[in-house]
Amino acid sequence: MKCPACHNNNSRVLDSRPIDEGKSIRRRRECEACSYRFTTFEKVEESPLIVVKKEGTREEFNREKLLRGLIKACEKRPVALKQLEDLVSEVEKELRSNGISEVKSELIGEMVMDRLAKVDEVAYVRFASVYRQFKDINVFIDELKELIKKEQS
Image 1 (cartoon, helix red, strand yellow):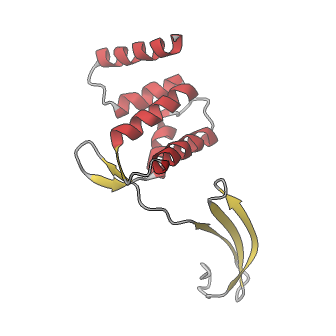
Image 2 (cartoon, one colour; image 1 turned 45 degrees about the vertical axis):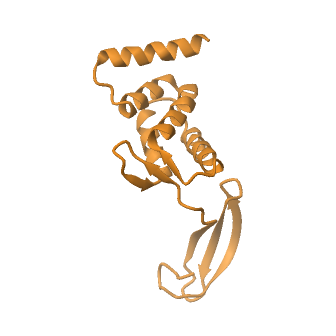
Image 3 (tube, helix red, strand yellow; image 1 turned 180 degrees about the vertical axis):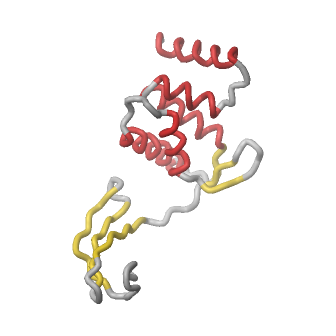
């Protein structure tokens, strides 16, 4: 592994730990030339998961993009970042376990909204308003009515 400080190719591993439920390994390294310490991550290469957008364009699934959207929806709400990371991991795990290489963005959005409604209702409404592109207040009210129905059943 090349040292980010001096670009020497020789480094030694000081510590290794599994992360992401054992799917990745975090390694602390030390450069043998300059003694600079740095962290690397090793991860199993997974086949790409392609998201088919509403307009028909395709792009690779990006968990960070999904997490950013959730963080925005949960702004000033009592939702821990760990909860959102777990939600994204859960959605990604379910998508990958289905064994399909392409998935419609609508399916991802619905999966996220189902889980987000259980975490925080206000964040759910915020996410839904952007995801479903509410055109007017009536659509917004209909969504709230659906949420109330789900909660009462």
